[in-house]
Length: 235
Image 1 (cartoon, rainbow, N blue to C red):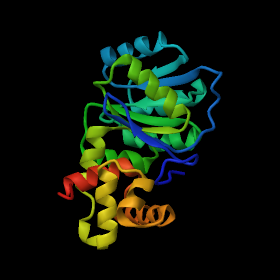
Image 2 (cartoon, rainbow, N blue to C red):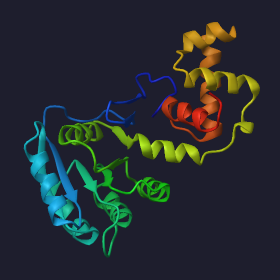
Image 3 (cartoon, rainbow, N blue to C red):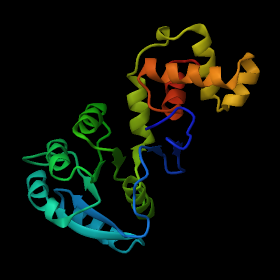
């Protein structure tokens, strides 16, 4: 479960390559290599990704497929921990394949890996059960890191994707003046303690305000809250 203050039940951050992380659970076996299955209809891209991941520490390539139909048919037997799924593919696309694999591999984490950052694709992929959405411009080391984190229960989202989603979220009129003040300070990077001091509130009250802000605006975490504030002219 993701919580607003990044405690033991939830955590979010963004690394230097613009990938936002949201912890969703923590049940991964850190000692075993992460078995990854790659789905992409472009042979050169698919083979390149599998080759690059195959030499990364802690990663084992379990298999690959050239489209959604092949992935749905062959991935279960490969027992992957993580599937890297392209979005646009002929026949069964990545979203439909994700729905199929979520039924046959309910524990497996599926991360979309694509060149398309269209928010419609993002929304459809997340509804289908994907736990992340990354763009293909990631360096190999960062892609391997994303695979490991996905297996560990940390959802992965490109910052461009998060910004696009935030841009389409509800307007500030949904918030009270006090909640808007709290949101502005969150977007400025203030901690709960700092917000409490600035607004003469208890830290518990600040936490409650932030939880209501996230809930009312349909946001997952403080990163999205900061992007929302920026995109809506609050900072």
